[in-house]
Structures are given as C-alpha cells and as structure tokens.
Image (cartoon, rainbow, N blue to C red; front, top):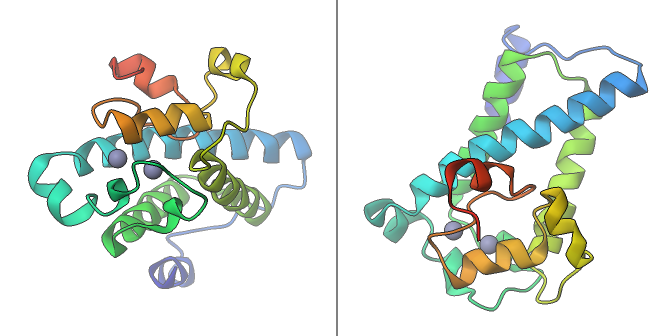
Length: 161
Ligand SMILES: [Zn+2]
Ligand SMILES: [Zn+2]
C-alpha cells in the first residue's frame, strides 16, 4: 500500500475517472481474471519445494480449512499479492470504485473459499467458479487447483481437479 501511494504520487499509477457502471463492471471482471492468472503462477511457484518450506507451508497446515485459514499467510505472500496488484494498476487506469469492489470481493471470496462447508450450488463448478470445494480440494491434493476466483487457469494449464 505504501509503495502504491509512492507510485501514485509520482504518476506511475493513475486512477481512472469512469462513472459508467458498464465500464466499472468490466474493470472488476478484468481485475478478477487477471489477478486470478497472476495468483495462479504465484501460487504454483509457492509450491516449488524450496519456496514452499519458507513461504507456503504454514497455510497448508490447515488441511481442514475454516474462515480464518485465508489469513494464515507468510508476510511475503501478502506482499506478493500487493505487488501483482500494483503491476496491474501501473498497466491500466482502473477506477477507485472498481479497485474497492475488487478488494471487497477478494476478501469475501477468500473467506468463502476456506469455509469447511460448500457455499455455492454444485452446478457452479460448470461455470468455472472457484468454489469452496474447488479450493478445499487444493488443501487435500496440493498439486491441483492453484487458481482461486475461477477454475479457468487450472483448466487451461491442466491442473484442474
Ligand atoms: Zn497452496
Ligand atoms: Zn487455502
């Protein structure tokens, strides 16, 4: 966040001014899909043995997940998330409203994704939604389901279960 403020002050990050609901919706969808892709690679990297030991093992101590599991992260994982976001904000002038909605959805999704019961109807799997079952499967089989909001990238890269 601090780095983001510095980048914004120096003109690297410019916030969009759109008032259009259609445009904001498109921006939120773009943020979800692009962050899902970046997080897929970051998460995949976090499972490489030498990185895993330092960075990601703690999160996987929760085999049976609960609403707090989302917050069991190494500080570098949180910083990694922030850096990926900043990269997108440098690349495109997202509006403050779109960014806020995305961050709110991220928090809700992360909490839902770690509940120990299914939140979504079973049919949602077919619509590429990253359901609770989808992420819970990752906690059971750590070689599958690296995506988070959607199962799109796991399907593309052959790690979907
Ligand atoms: Zn993992
Ligand atoms: Zn998890």
